[in-house]
Length: 180
Image (cartoon, rainbow, N blue to C red):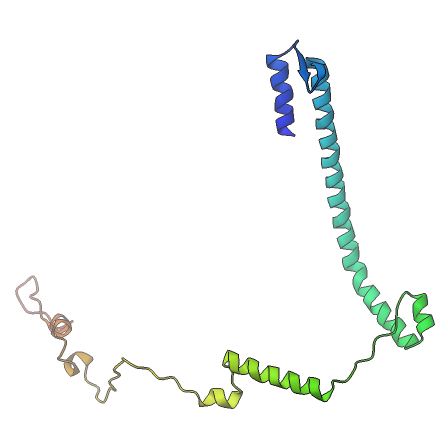
């Protein structure tokens, strides 16, 4: 729509009193502007219709949100009242619920085989099997603490840590300070 309006504005500015032959039809500036303005008006009608449709759909959604649960409950009520009475349910536009068909032995066996294959493919296990699985950590040395001495005295293999943590620095008055 903006492009059509720009064409109208450009035509009025640059060709105020011109005549055009477009596709074997002769147009004046006024007739071409009138034709293009008709397109703009039609677009505006469509935009207004879209807005009203959006408003109508919003109102419909609100009403359905209120009425939907009531309809579901009422259908349950009607089904409980009439059960399998096909003609009475047809008066409400409903059909009796379909009876559940029991699975055959083959269907049950196929379902069990499929479930087993799925568990094997996914690597899932039952609760007892999961409890039996223990983690195994490699590449980490864990040293248990057996005394109450500081870790710096127990690990002399790291001289940079022990030197910095136990070094004494002279105080500004010349005396040695206590370890940090």
